[in-house]
Amino acid sequence: MIRRYLLLALTLLAGPALANDLPRESRVPGGIALVEIPGGDLAPTALIETRRAAVIRSGDRWLAIVGIPLSTKPGPQKLKVTAGAKTIAVPFEVTDKHYREQRLTIKNERQVNPNPEDLQRIAAETERSNAALSKFTTGGTPVFALQAPVEGTRSDSYGSRRIFNGQPRNPHSGMDIAAAKGTPIHSPSAGTVVEAGTFFFNGNTLFIDHGYGLVTMYCHLDEIKVKIGDKLAAGDLIGTVGATGRVTGPHLHFGVALNRAMVDPALLLPE
Image (cartoon, rainbow, N blue to C red):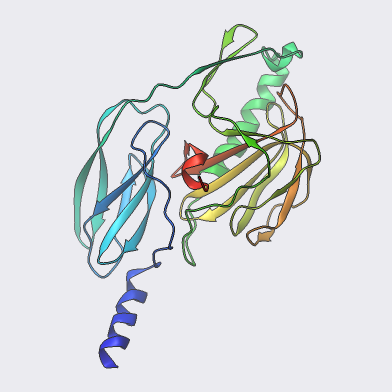
């Protein structure tokens, strides 16, 4: 009995317990690396470049759950891990992945070539988006396996090189899920709404902080059903599918950030 209480105390000291489900690993640009790192009874910290990565307990070991930015060049990478008074570099390897090209025609020319007033608005909205996607909050048990936010057909558009009206633009950083206008969208896990509003490119958009560097993003909504500060449970209604912003038709753009890296959402969804 005493041994059982000692083990429980050590677990509590160690920090958040491991959730039963982990994201699927894919050590490519836009993927996720599960990296074993050293640590004792207390949770170590891990940085990828300057951003904090989630660290969880898996049996008798510690794992860093690392989002790999799409812009990462294949080759050796490293985590800066601090355990107690000691800081070391933990290496891991990123392999190459080829993403397809996607050509789209947009009727609204300003959505391809914004005017100076549009650019000023876009810059302000980018700051808001970055602030939301960079959240790293702690507390509770981390969850890295998500429910699908909407019923619909998932595309493989994540990472695709996008060409709008013949002009190259940034790669697609989310998953498009095709569904009819008005289809309900639900929170894929518990979290807090940290940003919401109407954005130039993304239309009606909201962001949910799920903790430990996991933030989800929902774009082109017809209606937003929640507000900033709302606490959500998994499955709560958050909005409906629409066609606002830069789109060719109604769908949900679903984005997932881990340590601010926009990763492939499919890695956190049921297969």
